[in-house]
Amino acid sequence: MFKYKLILSVFFIFSILFSSAQNHQQSGTVQADEKLIDSQVNRIVSDWNTHEFKNMDLYATEDVDWVNLVGMWWKGRADVVKAHQITFDHFFKGVPFTKRSSTIRLLTKDAAIVHLLCHVGSLFPPDGIDHGNNATPETDNLLTLIFVKKNGGWLLSSGQNTLIDERAAKSNPVPGKTSENIK
Image (tube, rainbow, N blue to C red; front, side):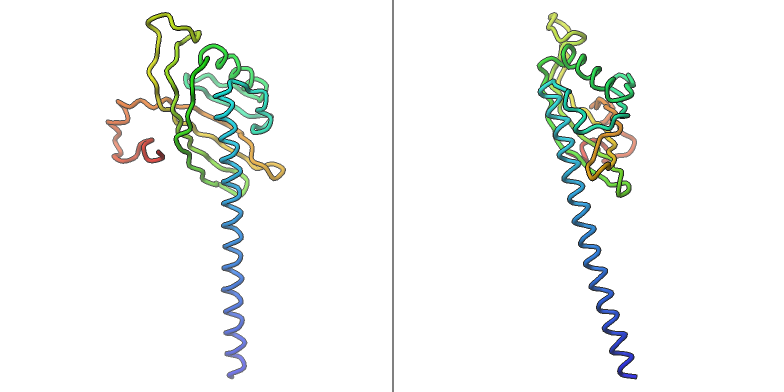
């Protein structure tokens, strides 16, 4: 009887150790994935600041789609690159973008959602030129980015940009549930 209890105890201890090691390994994988995703987010912000989108193939899928601030929906990497380049050559000419924070949530082992809070400098729509009365104030934007894991790397599959309206945020019907939570 003692022999069976000993065997069961040893089995139990090894099960706990194996489970703990597996959880630790999965935790390390999650952390590694989050780090890779964050580096891709930083590439996106870097492109916004350099106003160069020729490297989008390093962080976006071929079939990426993007919904911009005013509801334009661009589909496919070629169109997303073209639209961003034209917009940043004119509308956002010289406008700084600052990553304030981001949250990454792995939805599956191959899909993640990122909420990126960015500060956007003042700009002069629609052509990037100061006409004396067309300056917009600096704002914060909240972006929703969907990443997928392909060939061991993480690529942007979809993006959507939302302007944070501070007046509306103050009257949020769910107190404490604002973009401030991710700052």
